[in-house]
Image (cartoon, rainbow, N blue to C red; front, side, top):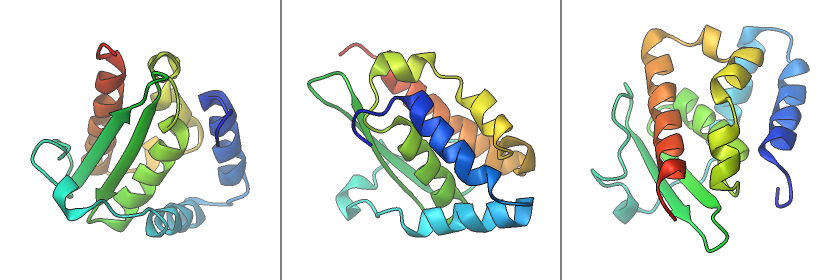
Length: 141
């Protein structure tokens, strides 16, 4: 996805979700996305990389590069959360900090029907993952 903006990526993801008829199909798609998410190395699953506020175990490694872009890798022990992670990685990994700061992920996730379909615990976990990404984007280079 090099060269794609977050808005381009969001459009691509939204088109994928438009083809899915109901929430059960979307849920199955999210789980499939999670199954393809590569795991972190064992040494990367630390207290520092752990995302607080998630009902399941979530670890997130965010690495800035020399062009002020963030590479995001993450893992969860829950299939649905792994799928949510996959969506966040597709949206944000490789994007610039400015792009990340300027994108309304909440509105996008609501638009594609994810936010409204999650339990309160999953919504809190998703908000915690988004906050980690946004907070990292706010940090000085």
